Length: 305
Image 1 (cartoon, rainbow, N blue to C red):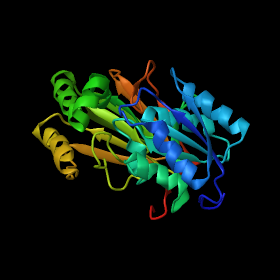
Image 2: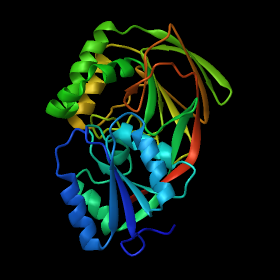
Image 3: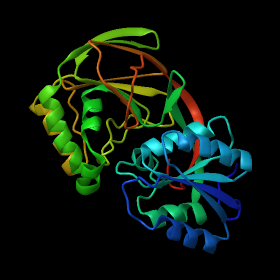
């Protein structure tokens, strides 16, 4: 598909998560944007877990030029999972409290501007990778330990009230209870062992509570996953977190954070830790993760790389 414009997009199907953290009049804003552009649109509403997968698959079968998702990163990942293997591209309207993938792809946070990207452009299609474990996928990251505890401890109501600073309270609470474990890593056949608090397997670099990136080298389109281990719970770590929250930047500190890249990753934590994937706490701990390169195409601003 060539770079989409209002001339090439005749129909879109929008999947909305009504439990997202925003209170915008989504339907009226979409209607105004698409009506002006002459684009036909249908809408589906998620009600429970995995609805985004089934609704996206149904939209592909019914025939549409673009599937649009309104929600946070969990909803985005469900819709991506439903689109995998098809040629139908995705457009993202940020509607959650984090919106990491939207930040990663420079998609406007303002709903009207994000709608305008679909209806008017200028826009292009960018192929992005996804991570896979078992029969599941992730677009942003999978993590063990401290970060998973932090995600679990951040309630939706608190995020809606305090925004990105809601995570700070969870950080402080998690730091009081988390302990170091040993990570046995195998990355593209190379083995390494390191002690740390959390192991993050990242596809996207941005952090959910701020525009800062975990590392400037992380690229959602590079065909690689990034493995990051936070090694110490000290004032250096707390300084990194607070600086990220307030200034939107992550100072380098190799003593605190260690970083690898690879396509095929095995992680064994001893003892085992809690795990999360794109904001959802997992029932089973994944041990083998791999990248699916250029898995899906997403509508992004023309000036995006």
